[in-house]
Length: 110
Length: 113
Image (cartoon, rainbow over all chains, first blue to last red; front, side, top):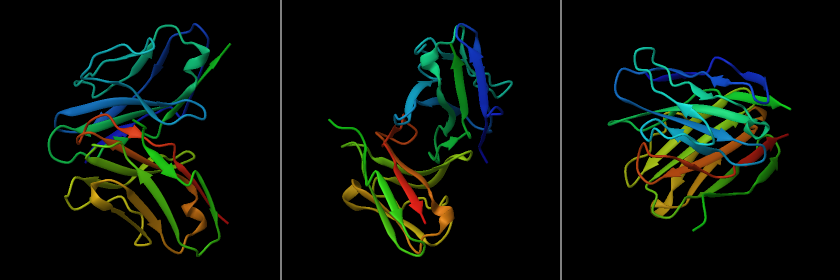
């Protein structure tokens, strides 16, 4: 069975500080990993996916198959980054039901 | 075109009543998902439709929950004999193909009194 773990329910940092939102997964096949974000009073939306290897809004995430992790990082947090972040795992081939983590609430203080 | 839409945006009902929640996916998207979002519980998968295939209902919490997707487009999630623990935000998402980026609707906030 596939599983996504986001160990932190809440992460609180000050503006300008580095931020890392952790995501660990368990899956034996080839994973497709995503980070979704939900800003206050907005709908859930894709932030980035590992196959595109992009940096979005200053965020990056690297898939580490050895550690089965897909942590989301930003070197300098901004107040507008405050949001709920969900890590999600989809499966390449076979079942496409994605598995979401429970989410991490990021609060960036001024 | 427009994104995924859901209606109603809010629904307050009494325990024991039936409710229907509607989702209009993005045109051309073959995959449609329903989730339940509860405080502290994250996103709970409910049901998945892909094209004309039989839906995957493995996430439905009880037989009071059912969903259908007509003509490969609009979907309706029905909850019969609602209970207070059904109170949550129900999210619908669609994707162009299985495993692709999901586009989410704004959700329906269901409150069961």
